[in-house]
Image 1 (cartoon, one colour):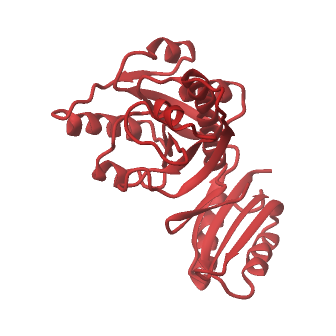
Image 2: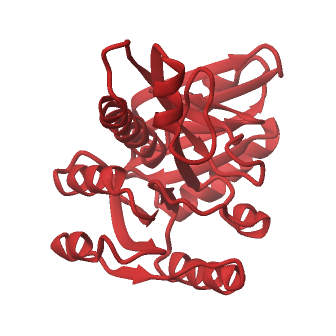
Image 3: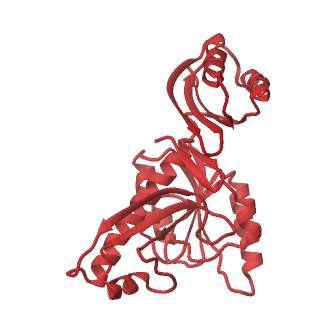
Length: 281
């Protein structure tokens, strides 16, 4: 049977789960997985349902879902569960996250289809070739930023990318590009307590003798590093750690956090809730 994933959000009220499950039952749908959340602070209801259905064609299913959604004021999406998410990765000169994502993809651990790698440096063209992924070198300077972003967007759109991953891409995206990629671009960055910005954050962390290092994966917005958070994690540190130790441990944490965020997004488990997220893990 054809498997689908339905995600929805709407103002909370009595009968939403009954309406959705009844709708699927009437069309011969078999619910395989379901999760829901009521945000009492905002009064919004969120739901993710994976179901199998062959009795009703997809086009008809969508039309009838639209009618159901109208009665509840739902924002909803229907996805084919077996369809890997077309993805473009942006990277600069640090390749740990890129390498991790490529390996997980080829190992069948991520339901994505990596269509292209875009970089402002040439460092990883051989890595891309080893995975048979097209590599696009687009240098970026202050004078050429607009033209470079236009080329990046052209690649993203031509590949039909539903997801753009900034895998340690060390360029700030323009407000315009952030808007164009809203809800489908994920960034990874280090996050320390305290948070160290600028160059060589692990050197700053070592100098301050931090006891925790970490990473945050979030959606990209025009507010730098302030987009809705998808996943975070931390690792312990102590006085015996060198800068190299912290850097290695930090890169491992960044790779793990980004991989989880990409997996959950590509499985349609992340729903936006204002400046926050609901993650049905």
